[in-house]
Image (cartoon, rainbow over the protein chains, first blue to last red):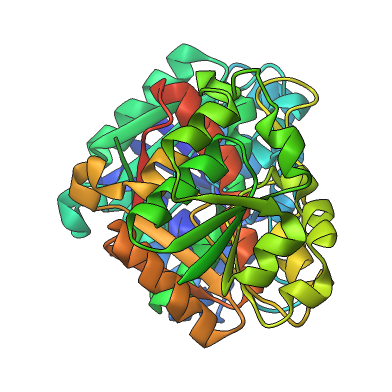
Length: 226
Length: 226
């Protein structure tokens, strides 16, 4: 499948590399590829500067947001949730029309320090905001309930025996995403329903942050026991 | 231990019966015991009218809120979260001073139908509200992340292999609650930290509601896989 990953930070890099390794044709979208390729500072969490990462991943292309999206069937929103709408706006509503948008972002606000607060209200979610802003796209919320290393390699924890969730209004878009998740190794995927159910998955984040603090690691997930 | 359970609905009844069965001296607190004993209508979820339940549980006493609290070392808030502060006010700040308050309520608002919305904001929680209103009490948030039948009988699901959380500012109060949870059969208890971490546990509720709808049963829980 042709996939655009929006966001060139550690999350975007990790997702792009994993989907490329599965055989998909992946292009990373960024506002200005020349600026991105001129970065010399290391990424967040001590990851290498973008050009170093790019050199190690020659199969992943780099393009403008609009170009990346227009080439793709599926678009992964791997940007910081606080800037996701602006990034998608820059890609353009026409380019996004009819595309599946896999939204894995959380609207965490780190501006007041740790722990971050959430920017969404309890009667809305980023997933719904994206769907409202781009009504012709097919938004599927997934994977936002776990660390990026578990998103792409769930088997590293308990043999993959933990749960991920999907929310979205378009059934075939959800099936496409479920197929990707399964290929990544996710074994327990619960369909919560329409995109409005993304609220539940996003409002889980404060508990996730509390658990990260209590456990001293981001490498954990939840299994829905039933 | 002497325990007051506030709330005579199905949650209060179930908690009171379970703690009494463990050998604790349990008193149910209600605004007006005579009115409660005169009830003839069945309870929520098809439970019997209160007097029938009371007849089947002679070891559980019934008293006014103030009387029940003043007799107890530990107070369980098993009222509807929307009315919890008013109920605790009626019990009285002096009676609650130095008591452990196990708060298992959720501030779900069913006034707009199903699914309910939450009354708390994303920068507060009922647990914190109770602690602020009764600064001399020792509030511990726990058990609000599961159905009442799992609160008192966790072993019915996966042999008890799922997680419950405690949040509270007072370490010895948390230890008291952890002792109770352990006696009820909870095997995996995570201490999230101070009472502010109750936000995470309370904000999990929209996901819980989404899961109840998706799974078609309230008899599920989450295991933190790490």
